[in-house]
Each structure stands twice: as structure tokens, then as C-alpha cells.
Length: 138
Image 1 (cartoon, rainbow, N blue to C red):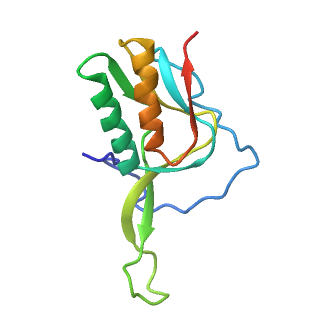
Image 2 (image 1 turned 60 degrees about the vertical axis):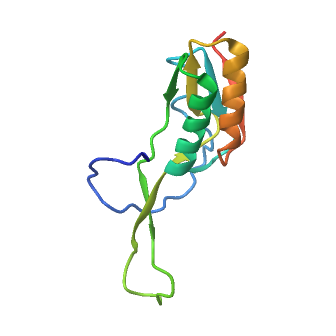
């Protein structure tokens, strides 16, 4: 099941503009696991991409260890149907994304050997639209 918010104050959001600071200020350090996947560039990550990375990690875990998803897609993206002329307002919600900046921890793992965790996170990183690096607790 794809991630999306249960309730929101406002159904549609404006796109937003890039800030002067292009580095993340929150979610920079490992909190739950010993090994994590950190973004090194900025992009919007969709719910489908998060789910694909989660499935590939779960497949590599093979019922051992634990993983945490440190991001949640709460930004609605709207889209007008095809062949619709301009005007008529903003389109309906198409999907949800999470804006990620460099430095954000995306996933964490614990409870499996370091080599297996590195391999699982490497595979998960290939499913995402950002360049990533694997970091350790120590």
C-alpha cells in the first residue's frame, strides 16, 4: 500500500520555491538503526519510489533485522487530465511526494550483518531519483 496522509488541513498545496539554504537541517543523523541511506542531492521522491525501495530492502532482509523509513510523502501534487485547455482552475491530486534535500536520512537498518545491510541499502538506493550514500553509526 502506498503512503499518503490520512488528513490534511489543506487539500492542495502550492509548489514552493527553493530556499537559499539548499541543505537539510532535520533528519541528518541515524536515530534508530546502525546503518542508513543518506541523500546527497535534492529531488522529490514519490510514494511509488519509496515503496519500491522498501520492497527491495525487505527482500534483502529475508525476515531478519528491522528497517525504518525516515521520510513520509505529505506534499500533494496536482495534475490536469490530458487534452484539457488552460483555465478551469487547479487539477485534482495525482500523487504525493516528499521533497528531499542533501543530508536527509531516508532509510535505516539494524539487526543484520553490516555487509548485508550495505548491499540491501545499495539496491534500495538504485530505486530512488537521488544520489545516495550509505552511512554507519560509528
